[in-house]
Figure 1: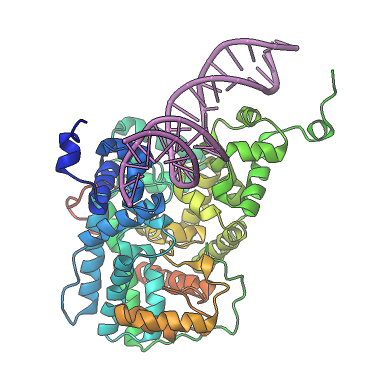
Figure 2: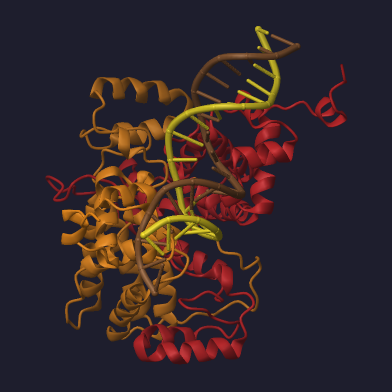
Length: 243
Length: 243
DNA sequence: ACCTGAACACCGTTCAAGT
DNA sequence: ACCTGAACACCGTTCAAGT
């Protein structure tokens, strides 16, 4: 019988290697082409070999998110909740910028892993350590939403296609759009000259992110200072369905 | 030759009927089981028949979003930008609550349809009519993000499973979680008694949405009143990649 | 010219056969 | 007991054959 191939002998598969390979694959080829079959091929194993290390594709994706969460720097010890939250969120953002697929995968997770729970727990802890009431902390965590992970849902921003567009072509597009969508055109004209596309790419993402984050933190600080408490309505007026 | 079947003769397929059927299918069976093949079967036609009315599945999904956008009530004519924006967003939210799959589909769209552009344009118009500068309007639209569509990315909220959990079982779960995730447990205990699950479902979604929306609108108002203008940094310190 | 069945190139996952 | 090739039940979409 032939010996196992060099590659197979040298690097026996385990869950960590599978996850690492999946992250690298998604970084390189994009999340849309990550399939169990493609991943297995990249590792030089038969597809079914992966199922010894992850129960199914969902567990693979959960594990990939865990890898990213591990890259987020731990919170710094400080009494200033605002700086702590800000640094943590911006660190999360840096991790997500390294893995453009991660935000889309995070959105599809239905139940948190222990690592994700630990991240949430420590984030809540920052507000509590800053003196926030349980009540306010609760609402503030909801208001942060996905911004807690360093991303926002920039709907329809067409970022992918904005890099290599001739400025004169863009100007023409904006011009043509002016008739039907005057306000969008106005915004597009008024923005930075680095180049805009349909709804606003070309502007500085990091600036936009921090603008919104600071706006929220301002609001949190104000409510905290004035000792805000929720006066919850008697009953919800809409179904409790989450969208 | 046999005549065409009653159904086929009575209701000839067109794009609107296809989109309407797709929306109904997703409402009933969930977006994950909406396939070209299933949709065709539901309409009593062969799968390829759909391709005469939509170029591909992406165009089908674009069209489905358009159907939802049409359900959003037009903005009311008023000089009060804040009320106008608030009503519009909450109307969008009502539309999305009727179609739980819509937010997930909106997130995956890469380029806006004319109808979506019109919605964006009118939303921008509300701020401009309220006297907001182009500069501020631009940043404010980014800060609104997906909240403009009436949804937020509630990451890991496990809403699906929270409806039928025995309160005593939940209490036990929270108790057990207290050791590893004390802050999460604390939040879960402190929340409403309507029933909580892991990270916070069971609380009033509509309340949380309006809390965050009003916090943002407060911030917008404040910046507007103080005549805020952006002092843009010389150059972005991070890659312009969007996440 | 129009319509559509069969086929292509994929999926995730099951399962039984082989060692 | 362990491993894996083949198969199953799907996808979206192409294409050529039939009318």
